[in-house]
Picture: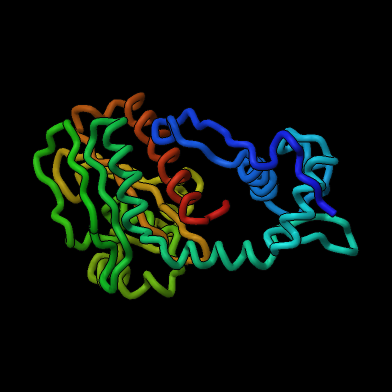
Length: 271
């Protein structure tokens, strides 16, 4: 029988967050969440000792929580290995949470915060029938000579967003659009050049273009992935060429990587 700690049974905990000041909660629920987060961060089935170490609690205490979590299906212990993992109730909750998630809205929220940190314009794109489509644009404080309107389709080969999709989507999805763009320019875009672009972006994790879609504008783009979804979104930062020093571009790329990692994690993607 699982017995809750007396100090936690029904105990209220004060939250210090900006939205939690003056509000009370059940501390034992928050402690149980530490156990679940330890399982999440472990990336797979874990032993009791590993969960205890990751959650910063004594094994005996963690075991009591695992018993209760197991009874309601949030965790499961393999009888053969003794390892713990998420249970069927957790999988159902996760699937339903993802079903209710508006991926574009999540990415757009992260794009706004990236805009605030960098001062540069940030847009979100999705994959459409004829290539990447801009679905959100957060205007920055740095003036640009021109902006791409929401709803515009970007080129696959010459835009940073397009190159992200070229590199991360299955070729069966991009071949038709790619063929249309290359037609008549085969000498300019040989297969070897396209393969090199794909390999470079996959290695770096982002694409950079200079004065490609808009003259005088540098664009840096990276993919946002969602759980069980082969079609990523893309975030791109647009900045004037005058601001594109090597050091500043490296800072922008680092901020972009931080942002797309956080957005992908929120959408349930685990690298």
